[in-house]
Amino acid sequence: MKVTPATRSPQPGEPLVSLIAILYASLFLLPFSYLRASDDARAFLWEQANAQTAAAKTPAEYLTAANTYNRLIADGVRNGPLFLNLGNTLVMAGDGINAAAAFARAERHLGATPETRQGLAASLALQSGQAHADLPWSRTAFFWHYAFPCPVRVLAALGGWALFWLGVFFSILARRPPHPHALTLSLSETCMLTGGLVALVFAASSLATLMHERHDSATWGNRVFASSTAPETEDTP
Image (spheres, rainbow, N blue to C red):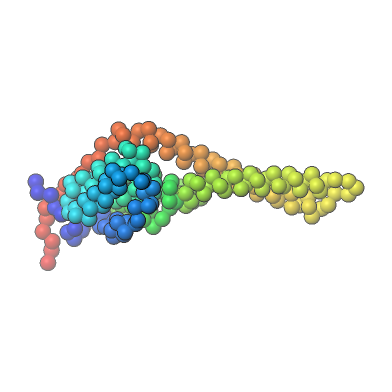
């Protein structure tokens, strides 16, 4: 069976993987400093994977590039651009399941971006076999969990915790004799309530992310990337 190039015009009913083509192209312009790897071997793998993706025209060739990116992950590299590039190449290879996992890890480092959202939508479309897929409702209901990178959410939790204790301090200050100060007491209640809520929400979010990332790091080596092939069809004039 001859593999149809991924650059042909999309046919009705196919997943909209062409949306991803413009995403990974811009990533090639990212300086290698984003990879945060000083090792020459890692730098070579990064450039090699970028070159393979730029030259790829079939799902199998995109899969080759994805496996090169994955060698960096196996070597201990962890950052958003790497997982984003990996997800893009896996979508173009037709591996929706592993692509979604890569985009999820990219979001943990970058937060939700137009690239990660479109990539996840394309990954879900590949899994369902539809031309388009909507993101789960939970991403809207728990927007703070997906919108911000994990380090930002950790800082938000610490900020909320500090605000809570500032409220405790104001509460003690407001109740000092001879007379309680109503304004200071109201300010202390506001700080404790707001700070406690912020600390609870973002601490739970950060903990869930760290647990998911730890699980993915431990099991990532067991993933087997696969490419999908489609029968060759002629484009309509």
